[in-house]
Image (cartoon, rainbow, N blue to C red; front, side, top):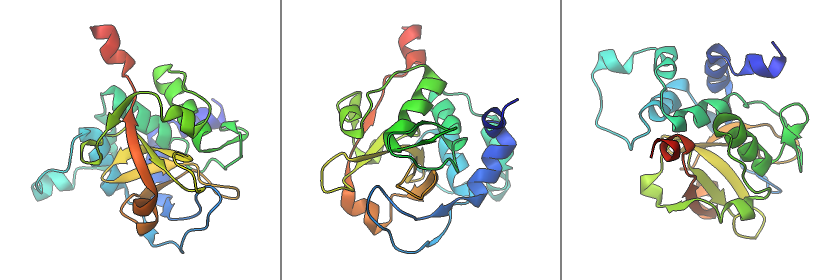
Length: 206
């Protein structure tokens, strides 16, 4: 088993989620200092349900282990999310397309969709923004793509929505793949929209 195959195991996913911090840099711009930690409990339930936030659950359900929730994943969207989380910590490289050599934002997205779904996406964030279907912010689900204006031009940055208003992305030079909150003012002000790619599992079932 290679190092990157090992990264895809569930224990690594859990450890990486627990260790990820926010925020750092995005494309060519510098963000404020870190504000906190993205906890497993804030991401895993949203990925598992792939639904908008629901009313508070009983205490016993809330304390169900994160490992158990991830082990219950069955949807194709969850495959995308788990594949993306396995890339946490991969260093940023402009034009990069592989975990071994580093990835930029679109390189990460293309790699995840290729590995999880076998789907080939265009090379740049702007080109990717023309694929799939438009999604309203209130209808976002894990696996959807979220776009931002981080370089004074629209759709210059892309990430993968993880649920609970968080997304995973490859930021900028010197950074690493990480999960951040879309509720931060930085991202709210730069949000350009979202797209949903065709699920090959649903397509083949029709």
